[in-house]
Amino acid sequence: MQFRDLQKQYQVLKPQMDAAVGKVLTDANFISGAQVKALEKKLAEYVGVKHCITCANGTDALKLAEMACGIGKGHAVFVPDFTFFSTAETVADLGATNIFVDVDMDTFNICPKALEAAIEKVIAEGKLIPKAIVAVDLFGQPADYTAISAIAEKYGLVLIEDGAQGFGGRIGERMACSFGHIATTSFFPAKPLGCYGDGGAVFTNDDDAAALIRSLCIHGKSGEDKYNNIRIGMNSRLDTLQAAVLEVKLDAFAEKELEAVNRAAGWYNARLSGAVKTPVVLSGFYSSWAQYTIQLPDDGSRDALQQALKAQGIPTMIYYPRGMHQQGAFADLPYALQCPNTEKLCRTVLALPMHPYLEETDVETICKAVLENL
Picture 1 (cartoon, rainbow, N blue to C red):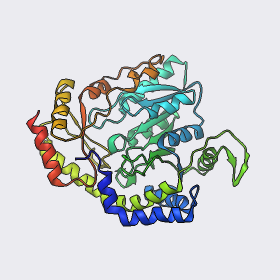
Picture 2: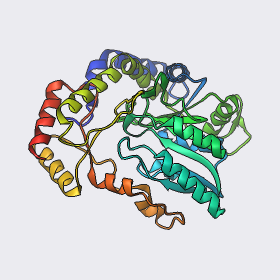
Picture 3: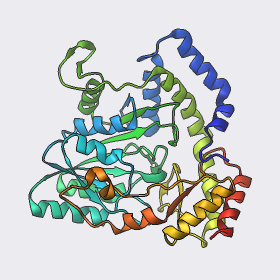
Picture 4: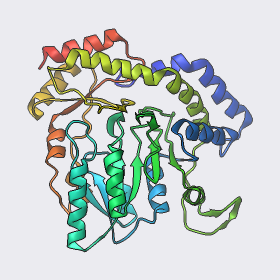
């Protein structure tokens, strides 16, 4: 059994995938080929924004967004404590200070009440300038952007959506990666929409921000003149091969895969609800189910269940075993807010196999093993 079955996905998409990759190889246009611009257009239309700028990976996408927003030394950036390291890594890399904020126990996303309290604390201390919020769409469900956007507006903060795990999710009819001033995503293979390597994208309706990000992606070039570099940028482009792969996958994702993962989540919920704490999708929200994460009473029962499932050939993962404030790289951070929910989640979460090609019999096998080993 696969945790995320990319082999099965390839077999299903093989005719289209082989043709798309073959065309890139035949044309030998490996950098900035026509497929890149075609993909950007499709992604922007799917998300519902004016601009999509692809780049080399999701971490670069975050850094590009933060650079475009002018984040730097002396700034406080409010980041959920329960997230992947790159959410905070890029902030620190730009010289800004991460303020880690506790998350909601049901959705795993940044808690609006804790967020506002953190902002007020930084303002009261007066040592840093509150600059931005980076909200993460963890495990596929968008963060509560109604509440978060209101907080950002109240305090004059830039809002960046880290949609690395949220692509395909939505609130009402508004798609993930369309919230905030700028949004980003990752095309790491295990993501809801993944390529066959690394890739990322930035989304915005801001014309100036889009132009700046396009420049930053290619060594700070000026317009179409790549030999006139007007700012310090980076080298971060999506390979044409990966764009071709993503064009095929985007069609499958929109046509059937997103519906399929939600069906699989329903199978899990029907069998596990009441026995363990299952993921909560808020009313009016729609998840793309990057992960299906249950919560156990404590780390002892979680670890015992994980070992029992492993013995039966069922893979699981712990996302995440430690919060951002517990990372060695941030051990000396001067701002240490209390994040009890994160600390509890790190001891109790367990992600079960989740992908569009799960069969109901697979879910039945997994759930039977879970229930027998609680």
